[in-house]
Amino acid sequence: MFSKIFSSKAVPKDVQSALLNILKEYRSSCFPDGIFAISSTPEFSKDGDYTVVHLSLPFPCDGELDEISDELTKSQGFSVIIKPKYRILPVRQHSLQGVTNIIAVTSGKGGVGKSTTAVNLAYALMEEGSTVGILDADIYGPSIPTMLGLKGKKPTSLHGNIMIPLDANGLSAMSIGLLVDEDDATVWRGPMASRAFAQLLNETRWPGIDYLIVDMPPGTGDIQITLSQNVPVAGAIVVTTPQDIALVDAIKGIAMFDKVKVPVLGLVENMSYHLCDNCGHQSHLFGEGGGVATAKDKNIPLLGQLPLNSDIRQDVDGGEASVHKNSTSDIALLYRKLARNVASELFYQLDTRSPKTADISISDE
Image (cartoon, rainbow, N blue to C red; front, side):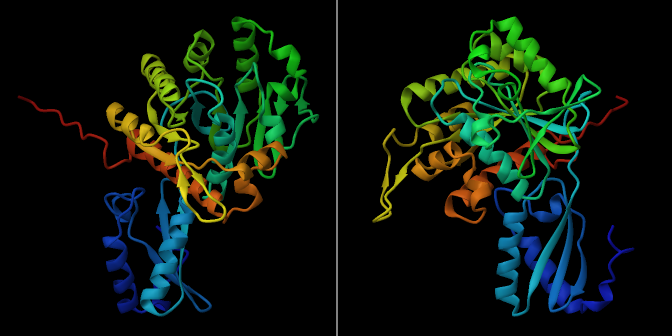
């Protein structure tokens, strides 16, 4: 694949063999069957003092590849870096231009940190190596403009009917909160809200993004069902807290997506624990193990457990998501792992290239 660009002659065969043997044995949640189950054999090249491994992969995972590179460097005694080329394809056919895959972020009830999770997930997917947009479908409470530092700004229009999304540090963003006063949106009835959202989705010129994160309104009522049916969503994630009442509503959210035939990629347990700044002790203020048990009961992955942390709230209140503020902080690394889990689950569950895709054979008998 890369042989026309990179010459493998610069890297000795024994070095290539040693690196290949280690990579073949590597396993993780992103690579449960190994890296080469979803990638062709890599090419090798030299870049100064670095031995470069060139991989083609179907989902973004820069953070994990950096970790693997560090381990290879330590074990081999020379500098190794993995340079990926991502080939992200649509897992569902749709007519929306400029978008490869749409991922809905939802919650059964408000107050569980759904929008905060959506924003940080979007930035985390960017940090992992993909191009991303975010669409605020929370018509009644559009908070994305505030969280992205875009409050008061307006998108431009192309030919009077096509809107250009705003840029938030590389993230393409669109929200009803950028077009109308927030107080006007809160009194809209269902059909009016649905029409407004359809316009946002279909009349925005998305700039060729790998993933569009859709921040859905909380709840499981008619508006949520209508939006889920009208948007060509590839997969959905459900955000909850460990609290019993939140888990009950999360189960309703999972059932809603089942009803409209949208695959649920997994569950995110937000506010899973509080980490003491002084001693590092974990306190489970909203209960413990609820997300794990619910995911197991519904046979869906638990994509991540995120802490209750005042910095996360302060960052989004100030218009700067934690992941963008410091992409290597402990909090950002948790979101980046969540992003890898979301992207890999989308591939493994739904992409026809996935090793989990069933082979169909036709018999003459």
